Image (cartoon, rainbow, N blue to C red; front, side, top):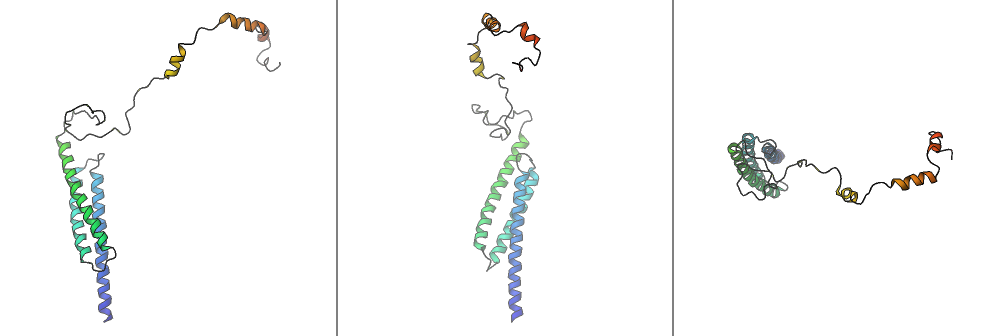
Length: 186
């Protein structure tokens, strides 16, 4: 009696645990494949192998989750895993296309981003980024245009007026004899 019921509960628990392990392994393979196929890494054969593994693990997980009768949130997990399986197939197509384009790309092709090629109507041989990250450095003027405009209104120094102001205020040789501390003695 009770041994049969505990064995059934343990079997159900093991099925659920195995289903969750398969689901998580599938998701991990999928995200590792996405990292291998990223624009920085370009490891397409490895990404394809990981995507194949992720799809087979997802299929096994779907079967295991479907076999669990009393699994909590099993319907939600099934729906989510089916959506991720669709994403896996789409990612596989994208990786195949990227690998084909990178294999057939000419080595002398210019690496302009799409933002720089707005008015070029040729089809690029390889996928191009939308923008360069970080952006390319561009030279800029050292002097802002405000000072360039203000320079037009600056004239030569009024030498006579400056000399007259120095004579009126007692400047000249008298101030030079006071030394460096002369200003503080006033």
